Image 1 (cartoon, rainbow, N blue to C red):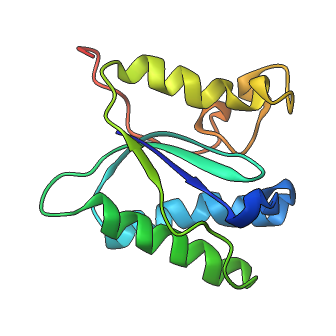
Image 2 (cartoon, rainbow, N blue to C red):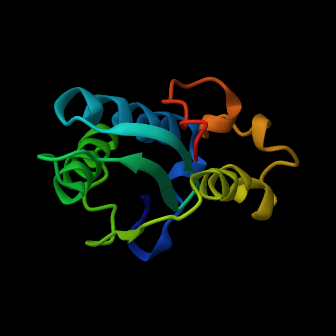
Image 3 (cartoon, rainbow, N blue to C red):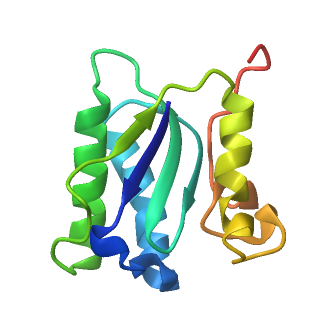
Length: 134
C-alpha cells in the first residue's frame, strides 16, 4: 500500500535537513515497535510517501500513529501533521515505487531521484526488496 501523510497547513518542516533526517529515522524506529515491510519512501518538505506492507495483526492506522508521533516528538515542534493520512492499495508496486522516487524530481528539488538523500532511491537507507513477481 502507498501511504501519504501531510504536514499541517503543508508547512515545509522537512526542508530542514535535520528535521528530514529525523522523519526518515522515525520510520526505522517505528519498525522496531510495529512489524511492517518498508519497500520505499520519500520525505518531501511538506509530506511523506511510504510504500509498505503491514501484515496482520498489525494495522496501518497503528503504524502511522506511531510514526507521526515519533516524528513530532523527535523534532519537538508541537502538532506538525494533518490528523489523517491517505492510503492507496496499489496494483503495480514497481510503478508506485517509481512515483515515490520521482516525487523530488517532479517538484524540481533534484534532477535525479538518486541524488535526493531523504528517499530510498538514494541507496542510503535500508528497505525490503520488492518481490520480483510483482
